[in-house]
Length: 79
Image 1 (tube, one colour):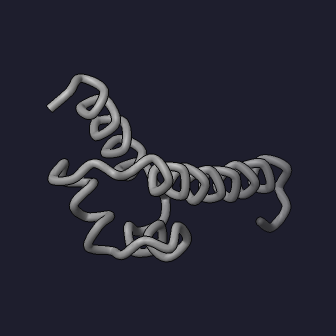
Image 2: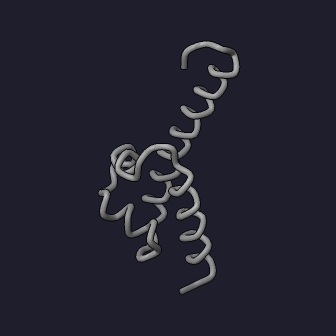
């Protein structure tokens, strides 16, 4: 396994661990099967670049939602 592949798997594992939604939510939002997401999380597979881009987009959307909720809570308004 190449170093780049290991880095991708490690980074993806970390991001999926930090994801506020469930892995099923990320899979649905990225239009990827839960089984594939689980294999990526466990380091059993490495996603293709196009799949990695869809995962990144889904995780970015989730992080934006979390940031918006945190900002609303800081302002004292409902998220």
